[in-house]
Length: 423
Image (cartoon, rainbow, N blue to C red; front, side, top):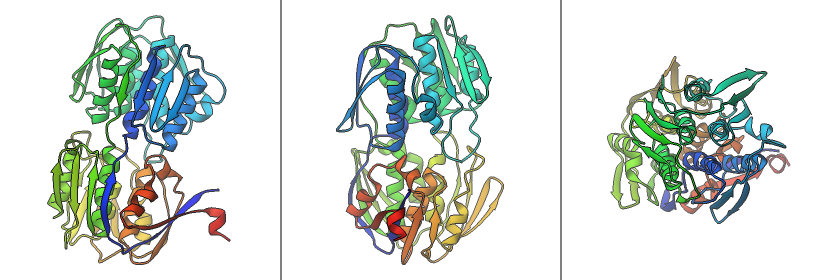
């Protein structure tokens, strides 16, 4: 049984929203807690389906978990895969981060090829190449990946592409390798910096995180740590766009404006009034929205995880906008759903052309992936009438208390179980 959203658009958003801790920082940090047998405490961890699955996987590996009031306490005295680990691992991309930690702590690991959103192939070859350079032997058979190493040794690793997951996996494994590892063309996202901060609090020595070259001095003794996760920049950006699409003005609290620099700059270019404060952002919708030209890119470029939301916003901007997706090859599946709501969008390879319409029309639409769900929610908030959004379990993976936060800003949004909806 799947839940649905029913959103009555045409109501402006006003008020204050508190941004949750980052999902994409929480997941690798929780995995990194496996690198020691000591107790670690991680706060500001959001209540999300992906976090719940990750904690279940940590439990199946042998970690003892306590999760209360957004605080997770992890202690893994011994690691041994058992039970339903493989079933949980198949459901989410971030499960593969366990490979670096298992290899570093146990000398071996075995996981299924990961699942996740249908936005492209997202192969794990970069992860495996990096682990192999550190000394791991790799076997792939019938959808399972096994890695093992008698000893990991530091070396220089150059990534073909600045993959976030590969960067995180390699950094975690390298903390337990003998010698210095230099990772070139590393991903530079804020979530990488947060992971490095946690590892350094554990006793590791990771320098250069947030730049293309990261150096890890391996072999240092690791211990437990206490850490607070950074705010979720994608959640913050989504609420910013929702406020613009629906009209009104909102304040975002517990946010790091610098993590949203490109998003803020693009909104200002479109005519949106964005004011920055200390840990706060103020967003006011303009009377008219100008078109934009956007191309996604690895950080500090335009984030691919904000691309669908901007498509929904620009669908009602004056003139013609253009968005090019350079990170994932299959991230326009949601476009046909926006077109059901009246959007005028043409797709050509890795680029879409958006010709602005006056407003969205309500329709029954289906979520295809996490950020597509955010785009459809933004469109529904700006439509006149009630939109039905199916398969919202995708949204549960990445947005904490979405309906409550939107309702608190004045949105008319209802969550209904499918069985109840059909009565």
